[in-house]
Length: 188
Image (tube, rainbow, N blue to C red; front, side, top):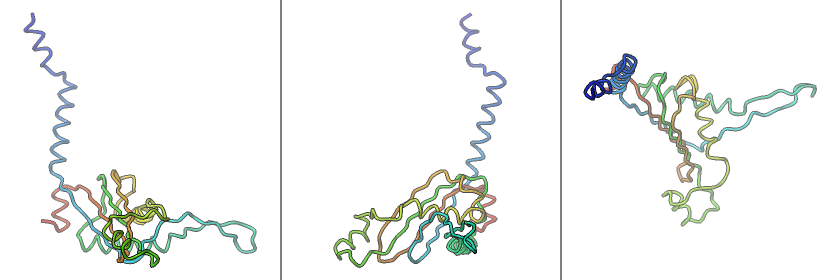
């Protein structure tokens, strides 16, 4: 009798077998994917996201809203498209994204040479405005429907704010795609 109990414990139900096969199939699909990385460096003073603004319309009878980021977003989108083409990356669909945004603001002239060197070498980090997340917000808004379908795909976000003699914005985007997609995009 004890022997039949052991067999019952080992034997999986039909539902459990289906779940196990589905699990194994999904693991095999993930193994077929490769991690791709897109690096984007934008030289110049990084811009931070700003809130929408209100202004009075003609005659002062109504208020209209406008997006102060729209011109910067358009420039970023053009640059993203150019980098995607150069690096052989098409729009990222249905893949979780790991995003790193590093903003390097110009070291103010009022900072002593010793402190400036410490900032440049990342021993010191700035605590000044704007908030660090505003740099990533602007890039993420610009990348929607260009680099990825929607920023809800971002599963991991690292955002850093530094001071440097060479102001710039450095973005690293990591995502997975099937090996066939990777080969079609020019990777070997």
